Amino acid sequence: MIKYQACFEKIFAIEFLRETKKHMVVSICRHNGRLDERREAKIKDLSSWHDTWADAHAALIQRAQGEVDRLQYQLERANKRLIKRKAMKQ
Image 1 (tube, rainbow, N blue to C red):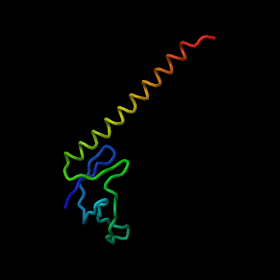
Image 2: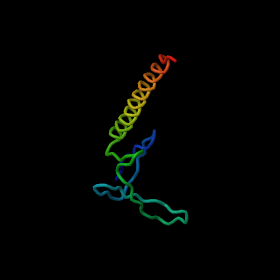
Image 3: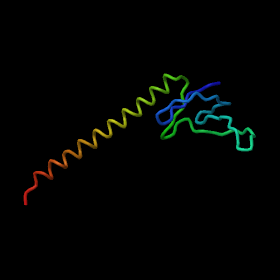
Image 4: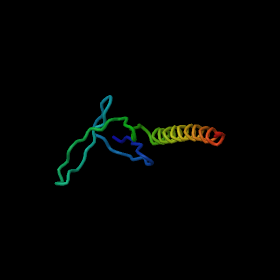
């Protein structure tokens, strides 16, 4: 079974073994060649799992838009501080 992981600026199609309400269980190959299982949280700060590529893409867009909104707010606050400091009199 395949799920899509939106991670940073990329989307990965990853085959998973099973899933729970909060975790994905994926197969990994250890350095000694032995196969093992790894549990990953479905939603983390920088990545999330989705049923379709379109859902993963939408999550990346939403995350980027949130970042833009936060940075615009910070820029507005910095500009207000700049105006106040320029208007200061001795």
